[in-house]
Length: 348
Image (tube, rainbow, N blue to C red; front, side, top):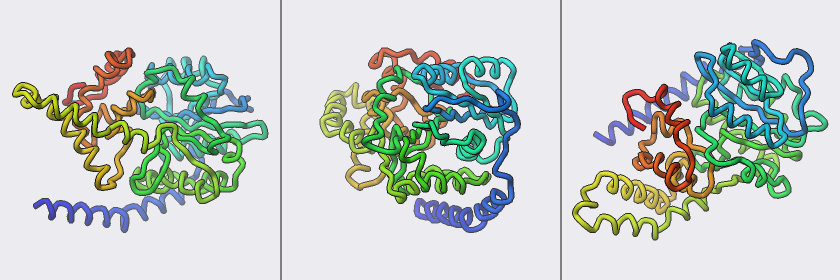
C-alpha cells in the first residue's frame, strides 16, 4: 500500500509539472510584470545606501505587531525599510503605523508571491542605485525577532561573501532560504543579479516560484561567479544534533516513567530522525527539522509555517515555548497572541 501511495504521488507530481505548471507559466508570461496598486510617498523615494525590501501578505490588510517590531529593529540599524504588500489594500491603522517606520510603502495585487513583489519593488525604486551598498529581501514568514538583530546584521561581511542568507538548504538544489537574503555591492552590480530579476514573472504557482526563483536565485548567482553563504550553516546545525545529545535522550528512557512519557518519546524519535537523515545523506529543512538547534545557536526567528501547520510533522516542536521562555529568556507571548488567530484545531 505504501508503494502504491508513493507511485501515485509521483504520478500527480508528473501531471502537475507536465500539464498544470506550463499553463500557469504561460499565464505569468502574459501578465504584466508590474502589479503595483499604490505607493506612499508619491514621487521620488529617498533611500539610504542600505535598503530592506520587506514583503508582506494578509488577506484582510492587517500588519501584525511583531512585523512592526521587526521592521523597527531593521530601521534602527540605519537601513531604509520599504514595505511591499501583496494585500492589494491596507487597513488605515496599518498604513499609518507603517508610515512611521518605513521610507516607502508599496501595495500591489496578490500576484507572483514574494518574488513578484520584490521584482516589482526593485524595478519601481530603480535598485540598485549608484549609492546602494546593500539590499536585503525579507518577508513575514517568521515569528520574531526573539533576540536583538544587531549581532546578526553585523555578521553580514561582504568581504567574505557577496550574498548572505540566514540559513541554507540542500533540498532539490543548494540554495539560501529566501525569507532573508542580503546582497552586497558585488552582487548588486553583477549581470547575474540584473538578469535574474529581469526574468521574474508573476506565475500563479507556488511550486514554480520555489523551484525557479527561491532555489533559482542562489543557483543563478553562484553560476555567475558570486559567493553565497549562510550565517547558520547546515553543517554547523547538524553538528549540534550530535551523538552526545542523542545519548542524553536515550538515557532518559532508562526508567519506566520516562520510557512511557510521550514527550520523551517524541524528542528521542526526532533526534533519531535527524541522525538517520545525516547517515543517509538526506537533506533536512533547517528551519523546521533543525528548529531547536537554530534557536540554541542564536537564531532570532521561528518559521510561522512550523508552528501553524508543521507540514513535515516535526515531532518535538511542542517544546518551542519552553525553549523560548526558559532557555533563551525571551517572551513567547507575542507569538502566542498571533497563533490565537492562526491555529485551527491545534494547540501551541
